[in-house]
Length: 475
Image (tube, rainbow, N blue to C red; front, side):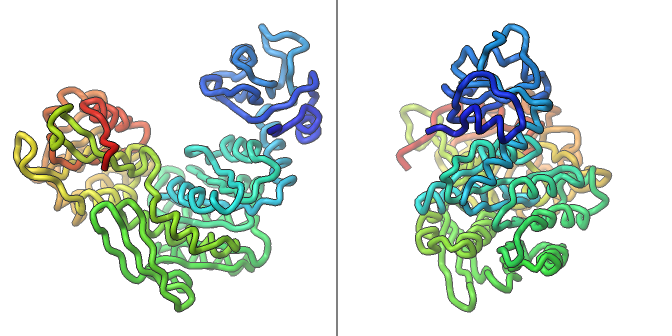
């Protein structure tokens, strides 16, 4: 299906199209480019113009550029604009303007991607649904997501992130959501903000472009919920508060039964029961808010609840899997929780709560006792209180219930030094160093968590564990 013709793209961007081409996708990466994509030559670590020839050779239908690059024919299929990023933004704005889709904006310090994936799963059976890929939620990720949106989309879920003041407003003005949700407000990116109040004010900007009366869903349990509520009142929106203190969607009771989370909630004084195929209070809270969005935009709540019952997290964000360590002995298995994509104090506390509630298996490993083991990497962008926030993990109730904690990175040394001898595992400067001798740190029967900021590369620890055996698919 054609996404953009040369004339449509030129009109949208004010650029000049060479050739009579059409494209069915938009890409910024020649490594994953598909046949017929429009390649966008963004300036990042390297100038995207250096890869235009490769993109066209790989099958790109055209390229969005600010000049004809070296090695590219003068009559090559191009869309030439003054500024490539501004051209992408214009393309995204045009895609938003031409669709009748109900657009949902999602932001929050924790849980944006998981909530987006929940909504994608719940809404896809109810209509043609488009959503951000992975965590494409920044100044180029949002316009790229919009530019990729087919004109006949019925539901769109746009994730919006920030790490500095002033970033949310231009994103929400571009996406123009019909409904928006703030998953939570927590101590993340404190290097760029004076305090958590500043983070709440920035997050609340996602409501600024909503039309009067539109659904504005927010977490009522955070300490800054009054700031979020005030924004909904100021903008004359339909504020919908969710959580244990939610006055619209109230979490009444939560129980974790093995790998399943069961939630009893109350909506407009009516009971609502739902479950998730993954353990975690934080997932349940995000699901409650996501269901509030589903109902608010007029989608089928019952169908969404049914779909939610089989939802599992995205890779690197709490994904659970079983790794069989021995090809013959079926009981030689461990459970792996891959939460390696990102970390801040709130998300680490949630992940440790999940690990503390997990059940290891005794009598199958060489140690004979299954253990709850955490590999924790530095949490970045926490500002002046970073060391204290790392040390504070030691005092969490969930931390005290773990058997072994291995620490990665200079800031996690603050936690490592506070751990009692029986819990203290190893400390390493880097994840690569932690991978050396990794097999001796884990055993069959263990439940293993990997959690840290993306730059700490705890994903390499996860991959190394996977390579020790193979994932079990017959669960």
